Amino acid sequence: MIRLYHVHKRYGDHEALVDVSVQVSKGEFAYVTGPSGAGKSTLLKLLYGAERPTSGKLLVGGVDASKLNQRQLPFLRRNIGVVFQDFKLIENRTVEDNVGLALEVLGTERGDIQRRVRAVLNVVGLKGKEGRLPLELSGGEQQRVAVARAIVNDPAVLLADEPTGNLDGAMAIEVMEILMAVNLRGTTVLVATHDAGLMERFPHRGLRFEGGRLVRS
Image (cartoon, rainbow, N blue to C red; front, side):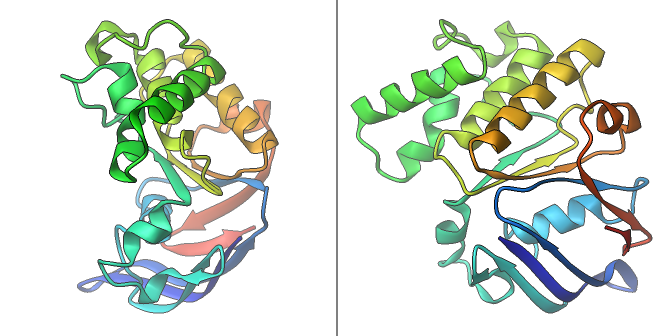
């Protein structure tokens, strides 16, 4: 599902990723770990096309993401859901509107959007909160909205960048349990985190980065 071959990413004189080669299989759950500045977020940005590698080859679902131009990127992103640490919800739009935004962009009919949004909100435990605004929700609920938005299009790959970083212990566990459930549906999931406690509670393969290098897989 995800394959990197000798990927480098430089920002000026700084090498954010150094000669990274790794494979993540379809349906796998894996952590991307390491200290701050190790290259975790850079890796995820490359995978969903926010950044391009300086050199090397990067395949996502058989598509070489390193060669896509701006017009082609939306086709890649249709198969990738992304969850951020700071939620990135639109504060003046309802939960239903936030979750359905990706479907609106694809031109999905309004009735189908409502049906799919309500189904996915039920999956993440937010049934009945379709009309709420993000600031009317707790931090854990906002992150669940973000997860719902990322999976409403049934993506092949879900990327989560420190998804529990702003949450307390109980809420972090709830979000991780949802990510596990998404993975059980067949979605390939990569979670960037440095939370050792969560990785011990939910053990899976870990890709550890240090100084931009993959030191353990």
